Length: 117
Image 1 (cartoon, rainbow, N blue to C red):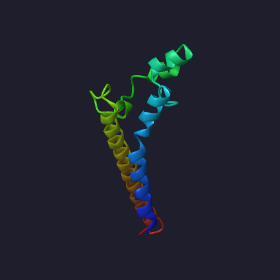
Image 2: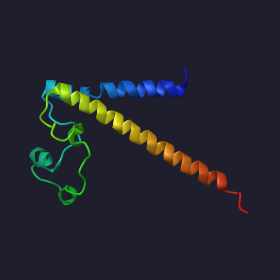
Image 3: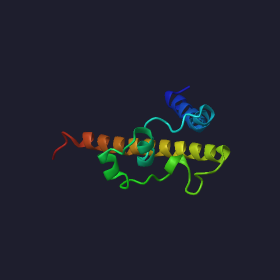
Image 4: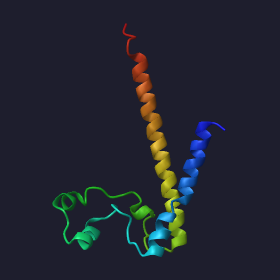
């Protein structure tokens, strides 16, 4: 089996396993994943919102907040699982697409170096 085939299979398995990120915290009553806190949750955890976070909190709005589609925030775990898998696939597609684009740009740039007319 080719290395790229193994890579795609591995990425597919990881995408399918991504809903574990909702089931385990729910089962263990663990709350949010470490480091994925918004300003409101940060205030609950440490008692204040760091000035830098408060300053830029409204600058970035995620395309899929909490890895779910808009309006699905309070949906059941089954629906959220599907949203997690779609989010993982979108992330994989964006990373692969970005990598291919950067690779093409860099290979084109390096092939023109030294070929001055």
